[in-house]
Image (cartoon, rainbow, N blue to C red; front, side, top):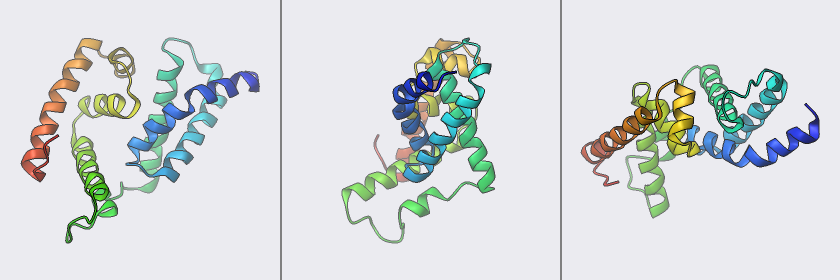
Length: 168
């Protein structure tokens, strides 16, 4: 693939891939940037294997998800997101810190989900993928992806209220 053509792909999809990985890394900007670069590096190396059975966007998100999984395995365990983002012994001094704490707890609940709910939520929340794109990535029907998403949102809302007192 010519470098100029790949630069166009990078310019077009880099912000979306970065945002997806930013969500997966719980807003760790440096990790998201590093994983985004690795995603496009791997995409460049394997572009000849792209068969066009899905959109280029979906293909890049799948690579990003695999790069993230490799990153988590390499770390040998996921970081304790809640303790990294907040100190539960003292109330957060600002609204922003409270919001970050709520997001961290929501992220922990999402990480506890079984498949395919876990992947559906990741794709929908962090990459704003359509149900059709999610369905293709997970080998399920688009209607099934929508049902899983809506049921999981209701479950997460209930869990956030029950465990932490948050109304979302």
